[in-house]
Length: 113
Length: 115
Image 1 (cartoon, rainbow over the protein chains, first blue to last red):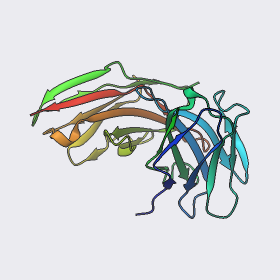
Image 2: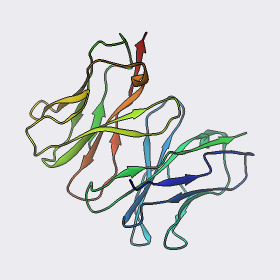
Image 3: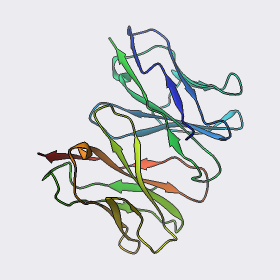
Image 4: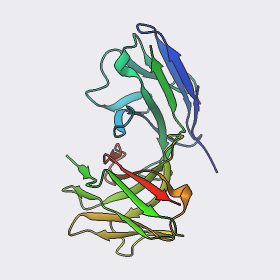
């Protein structure tokens, strides 16, 4: 069964450093998403991406965040200057039209120290 | 805006028993999907079951079934013959069918299956 792949599974970074979280969506999917889950809290939407541009973003997704699809397969989330409160699980997801195949990756646990 | 409410932060049940997790939601839309996701200690998000709002029949996946009450905007998950491996966080979630939108999650119910 097709999967959404995320790397790395766990990343530790110093406060103020830039991090890039990587995702390989399912190949025939058109819509891509990032979600965040702070430990013990609910999963929150960050951003959606379609046709090489952001289609929607939440208030969490401020100027320190950016997304990119640098080639035909990868979808990345960059955090420019990490803060302690960015420590969370980050999930990538992708979907075809409508619900069709809305699939989450296994997540990247980001720890900012 | 859509909201999803899970009123049970934590539940415990003996192995082999049946447990029901509650979920209510609020939306003005008529076409949507509802989901239950399981999140074990590994924190991976695993789809348990989904329901299309236009279907009257309740979805079933092996030991997992839902009670979907569209008028009441209620979507509960029943786990029959519960197993130790069912211990996890369970999230109820909503997705509009009108466009490719974000999934809205509830705060979750932590379920403990006791041996």
